[in-house]
Image 1: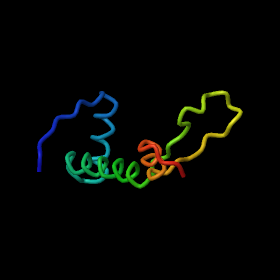
Image 2: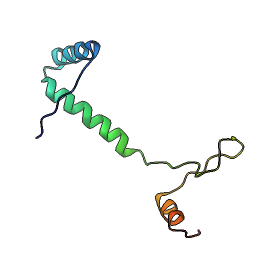
Image 3: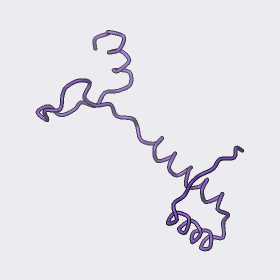
Amino acid sequence: MKKTSVYLSDDEDQALNRAVEATGLARSALIREGIRAVVLAHVSRPRAFHSMGRGRSGSVKPRRWTSEELHAKRRGERS
């Protein structure tokens, strides 16, 4: 396990203290639980690539590219 420091605003600190009182869990356990929830939410969403230089005119709906298509495009291959 690694040690880290986190700066909290007064409101965040008070909210964390209320959560500690409500759950009976340690501050560190609640912080780790929050980190796991955020990481899971971001990892579970597939990354969507847009635009690829189509501009911002709004006339063309952005295409969702797969990572394989992006790699092929970067290598100069045509699909």
